[in-house]
Length: 379
Image (cartoon, one colour):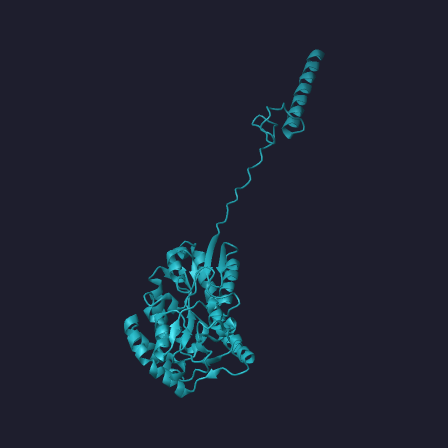
């Protein structure tokens, strides 16, 4: 009986000891035998018991960036064109968190005013801001209408209202976009034209007789010079100072900010504010380049121009006022302002040009009348 009790006690001791050891192993206090070593820094399937392999690092996907190359014919300091594209570059980087990188080539370093539109259409450059006369009447016939004599002396503020408040603007935009382009808006660039002369003041038609004048590119601008009695010459803006200084031309047509920035006044001469042309811009982008952007980036691009254009209108007016003041200080004499009779004489002399080019350029007479009627109704 005693032996039996001892056996039972010994069995119970073994069972308790076994349970204790098992619980220690399961709790990790006692490790089992090591399995075969896995790769360096890892634990194999038969490795240390109770230790899970580390989770793989999450894969980081690269964010795609897009480059937009812009050609600007003027220097970065030239108002408003330089600041327009400089601000565009800044806003696109900000809006897109660096997904869009804008590269602007200033001062006509990529393309001149006549070859930039074909370059954008072909995709050789993504964006530019040409004047309608530089785009050409084959692309936007109605875009040429504001250079007609009917608008001599009309302030640029009213011209912008014609574009933005009547069907004229949408028609011009559609004409341009039909050629594989996207147009985010319009803005004024230099207001209305001035004429610079080294041969004395330009107030009457007789004053133009026999002069050689630097003229903006375009058949209509050249026809206006010829009708006034001068010989037109197309010269790049960056080369215009030397053309005046060396006597290649006797004068030229540009804007108030343009004549000050180009320093023609250092040679001498007189400035007449004829207001016979309006300098404005049609920003264009290659349509394939635009459509290659994701939808949210296309929206950001349009939003950037919606923010820029009101500022461009202000910059343009400020540039005209400040450059006129500085110009008069440098020349020591006032800019010549035409009287109403003198302006009417110019307009009357140029009427044959208007009749010819409305027909030859394909300007829609009904649309031209919309613009005239809108202006006539303004207070």
